[in-house]
Amino acid sequence: QSALTQPGSVSGSPGQSITISCTGTSSDVGGHNYVSWYQQHPGKAPKLMIYDVTKRPSGVSNRFSASKSGNTASLTISGLQAEDEADYYCSSYTSTTISYVFGPGTRLTVV
Amino acid sequence: EVQVVETGGGLVQPGGSLRLSCVASGFAVSDNFMSWVRQAPGKGLDWVSIIYNSGNTYYADSVKGRSTISRDNSKNTLYLQLNSLSVEDTAVYYCAGAVGFTNAFDIWGQGTVVTVS
Image (cartoon, rainbow over all chains, first blue to last red; front, side, top):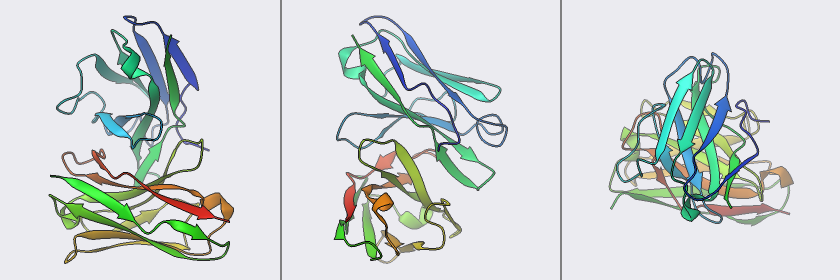
């Protein structure tokens, strides 16, 4: 069972915006600015989309943005495109185990 | 090119052992946080173990006491020794490195499949 919680699925139409939440505790999401988000297409390796809560690696579309409030982090994808359909995982450093933890993942469907 | 390539997966009987390898190129495993992450069939990502550049290691409760993460700096290779395997260990095992960033894993391999049956 994941220490972080995410919705199981979200959906949106092309061009719309969606937000995925990731809720943890003060030992992980709320206590450190080390939240990251990963995109995973079926049969592929995860891809880093966001690091340090809000930062985008070079090459990641600016349609992806993220934020944090208290123990909850959020990933927003604007201008949805068919290629955004994938699983999204949040991750955080946790001082409980001095390591990292993943959320259970959210499946994004672009309908 | 900065990349990692995992090998060592396969079919193993319950109670058996495997050693997974992750060869890195374009960066030094000794300079970065390196981790093993697994994904059971149809399930989400599950962090397994990490070795920091300091050499400190940490393990998920699910593998603690029966796995060892290590690195060979001369071969620029990360390892994961898995013992006392059970069907619950069946998964794709990914090697991941925090290379461009300190607390996020930006370099992932293609994964190696471990099947315990």
